[in-house]
Image (spheres, rainbow, N blue to C red):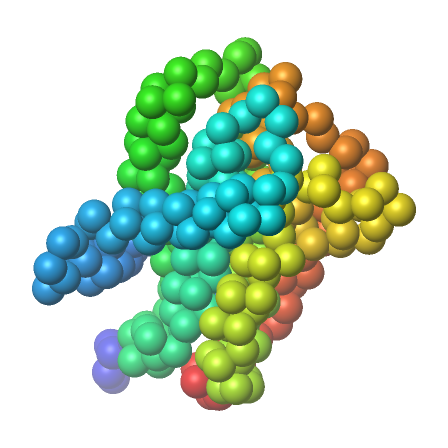
Length: 275
């Protein structure tokens, strides 16, 4: 009689089992995140300095166009500080969206060979953007010191808004990574979303320039609430939050995260067959 035993590994079908699997495979999450960080800056001339150069150049362009030419108001806040405080969450979101949307396709070979919770792949790609965020935050500190701008106690709430930006990035990333598997056209749509979103989000200007009658509609862009929250935390009493719109943006973030997770789980079950 043969004593050979065939072991079949199947994904946990229950949500509790799935979360337990995520914890069991946490080392794979760390490995993928570290690999993506190394690959991102491998064989680049200035390496990790790209995390500084890109937002810095964007800040300069926006300050000239919106601050000097268009002369949009910034209150008592220096315009470069106003712009950079919004660039932090926007760059985090846009980089995370670009990385996570292609993450399943990039790791297709690995996913067709072994089982692990596929949620690890887009989630780990977001960590690269978090590293960029932390590096860019140093530039904001330098700017605030240069302009002698001191934040108040609200800066202590910044981690909450960073968590909100993280949920927004993961939620959108889950949607687009799953859609990209089924419809490869989405790899061409994502750069357009990022480019278009930069100009319809209050990055180069304050949300206060939007007419009052359009503020609530404008807040249907989830990044409006995220950016306004960052500015409120960093710039303190110099910025007021439009709480009705902020509530709408927060609600949309949680809806996008929840539905993105549900849709991703649906696609995950057939991922190996369609990828």
